[in-house]
Figure (cartoon, rainbow, N blue to C red):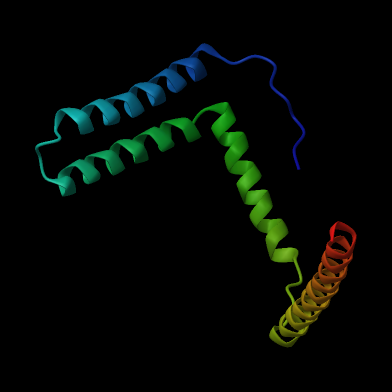
Length: 122
């Protein structure tokens, strides 16, 4: 992983983030303004504005860092050894059995304590 930290943001990055906010605001206002139009056209417009906003956001230094993080996370996920179906079923049955035993123990304790409380109270 890269451990390079940026302390300052360039004016171009600030301008790009302002553009992203403006695009999102334009989408919200446009959706309200064109409320009488077909839902299909509004959704297509919002998807297009969202795609442009994401593209602009990914071109900033924070966006590049986020993209790198996602790529590295995908590489790490490929390294994980996932359990087989029989292992998953066995583990599931063990968990269900433990939960059932714990529920029976708690039910028994509740019954005994309820019976003792009724004896004391009368």
